[in-house]
Image 1 (cartoon, rainbow, N blue to C red):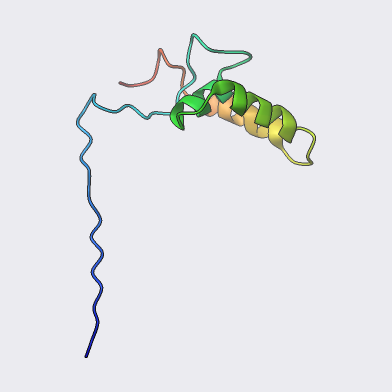
Image 2 (cartoon, rainbow, N blue to C red):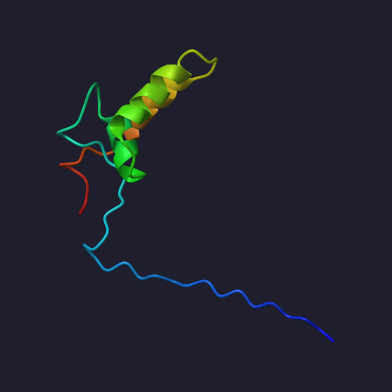
Length: 83
């Protein structure tokens, strides 16, 4: 007897304008450049939590400031992002 499992993955079509999950730096909720706020909005988190996590990560060795600067350059501004 052979057992066969079939897993179906539902595909959800997102209609244009229905769900906007673009990664951009907001104009209204910035502390420095809006990178942490943009990441928080993208993942539906509180911006304060992302900012605290970033500041806490500065105590660990690594290129956090360089990553922040690169994100600042690569993330589009909310007013200039394509809708």
